[in-house]
Length: 150
Image (cartoon, rainbow, N blue to C red):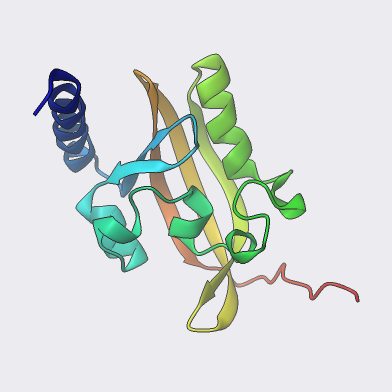
């Protein structure tokens, strides 16, 4: 194993230690490409996924946002331009400033059904990464999904 592989593995192990100490479900993201590097067990349980279904994926893919299923994909779809979560993550990477209690409604696709989910996250820059903690991810009582006009 070369030194850079060892360094990479050590950073991932250190990241896992930080993540597992988090009170909330948490994801660690890299900036370029903007993908999840790893997640804690609370996040795996929340999304009903194992690490291999989270690591190397974009946030919307982890959350099952309907816009992550488009041809353009998560963060690149026209509907992602005003995504509060994307904006918070990009802001954290760009400025280094944490974003606290960013709240939005995402349309989530699970079992071929689309359901609005109330979501709240906070972001924090940790070295070259952004830590995203998920304070809320639950079905919403209000609907924001509207079919596109042909």
